[in-house]
Length: 208
Image 1 (cartoon, helix red, strand yellow):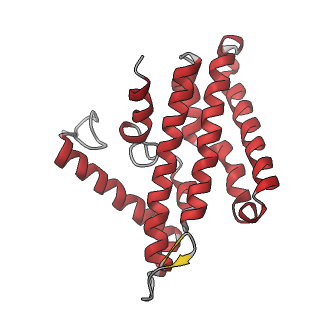
Image 2: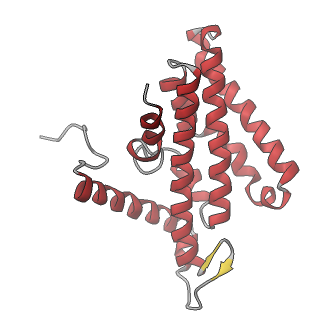
């Protein structure tokens, strides 16, 4: 099994935000600044990797009829661990992001990878898939938050870099979805123009 191909798939081929368009609302909610986007990405990377690991290890013991509640219990457990760790060791950040960390339990990308991949694969491929998907989510959040913080606040990681008046709409939810759409379009254009791909709509049925 090609582990690099599995890892790369989470970053490029099936990037959770830019290709699968999953978990867009929380992705927009926390990306008004690079710091929050980066830390949320790290939290999701940890949770999705540990959930994939746990589901893969326990898949033979989980009855198919209760697999979804079992997966949700596993996800909630690792989100709780992440929430408590951040509350204990990053209290300043936790004051701003605590609510969003708890909402990770509802992120569609985590449940979907547990169901689609980890429940059918061995431990190592499942861990690699979790790392790839988590890294893809992290990169997407950093890209979105970078654009929003520079244009909306004239800063990076809270440090001012532009003296001109910022575009305040970029730090609002409307600006967040606008940036996500622009980045999706840009990445699709790059793939089609330079790598011979067909964009995010590849394989979709065409209307007659």
